Length: 155
Image: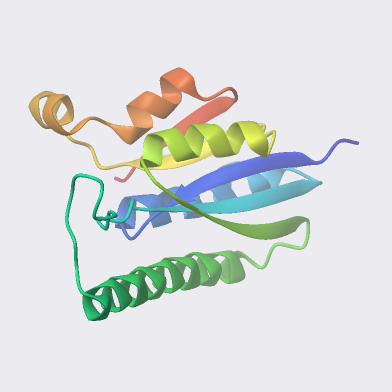
């Protein structure tokens, strides 16, 4: 039997952690052979070369920004790992993947590269105007990911 591959997009929000818990309760508990991929996307760095347009920071600032990014990544993955441990899955292998860039593009690219069967993600529940101004990662992924997409709304 083919291994089912589920990608869960996680970030620092409660909505994404709820989506991960929902995934265990509603998808993984009904699956015998499953690989769960925890996908975290770091924001693109705001540091550019002197030749490009953008900001130029001293080395101290660059190091501090990189450390903060690593700490945030570690924190998100620790929280997601704790949720996985709480469910104590015996039929699931868990892999952690970290990408960098525009979240919607990285997520869609990752599910294609990983040949995912399902993408699970939370939603921040923005209204029409906020979504129109900020864009919606989950909305973009629902339209462009090449696998089934489950968008979980936090109650």
